[in-house]
Image 1 (cartoon, rainbow, N blue to C red):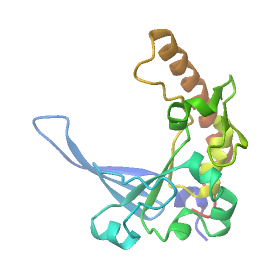
Image 2: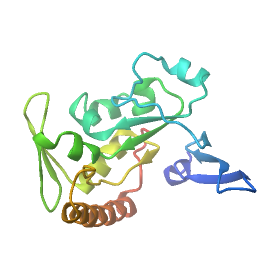
Image 3: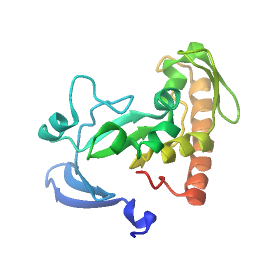
Image 4: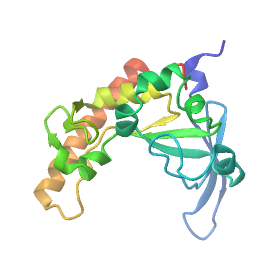
Length: 194
């Protein structure tokens, strides 16, 4: 059996660089999957791109789908997805998955959250349940989902915020990124269901 760390090692190969600009073409390899770069990631918030079957996405040349940790945690839940064999088996998608950490919801669900030192306390828009998302919890959920590429938990500040709010969000995001990196060092990036 292949070592899990080797299976999910990320490699980037630069294939071509422009002689007149910083543009480049490359290839990411992770978990036996190849992603040509630059690339467009269709959004599949809940592990499916609305209106397109996985084979249609493949036919269009996509190799990577963006899914959302927060929304998948709420419904159907990382436990169910892990039992189904991870995101790829759950969605029937042979390509790669990148999961957003849930940090965008700090911005988009501002009326349903409270920012705290250690994380964000959300009120579910589905059933009102309380969810406390920390950097470590966001990483654990992404591991359980079996994502190929995970994002560090962050605070996405609105463009209209003032300098003090932007600096506080930056400092908080930096601290949380360090905690995510430490969690990654302790546990690795993904579960065996990826």
